[in-house]
Amino acid sequence: MKDFGVGTTNPAKVSAIQKAIGPGAVIHPVEAESGVSAQPFSDEETIRGAVNRARNSIGTFHAGIGLEGGVVDTPSGLFLCNWGALVDAEGREFIAGGARILLPDELADDLRGGMELGPLMDAYTKREGVRHQEGAVGVFTNGLVTREAMFIHVVILLIGQWEYAQIKQDRRCDT
Image (cartoon, rainbow, N blue to C red; front, side, top):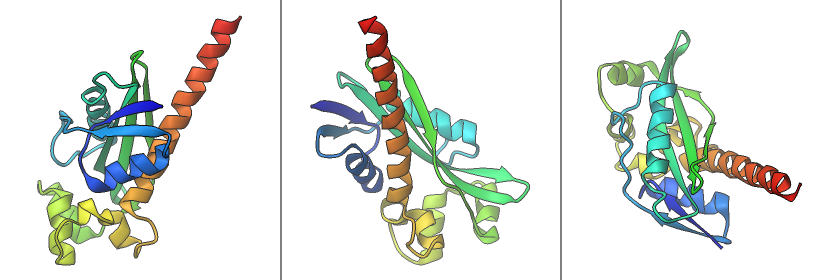
């Protein structure tokens, strides 16, 4: 059985990781610093946050997983993005990204002004804790795609890369 450090205690992210990894592994959620702003504002910053969370959660586990959500400004508007990283005990790093969705202009303007998406979504929906539930993607896709689903996809990509690297390494050792 494999043990994974998970660089978050956010219920949507923790649930996504557990569902993606399956029942054959144990996850250990920890508060892990991202080392980036509360609202990452580029792919690069969001990736850096995911990698830092993975590194800061590995401890004595087989691997650490970090997930980070952010936004990316493009000529077409401001898009939601999400990235993940897996760092294993051997120091190998794996990175994967997920779906993107265009954010409404009224949110984009506030985000560009320095506000964070989580509190903006709470105000926009007149509810609390949207980031811990369906997330902005869930709101703007009418629940068809949730934050958890987006992160499940990213974690599956990470685990698949990691397993492939292990198989490749095992083959080299057999020769």
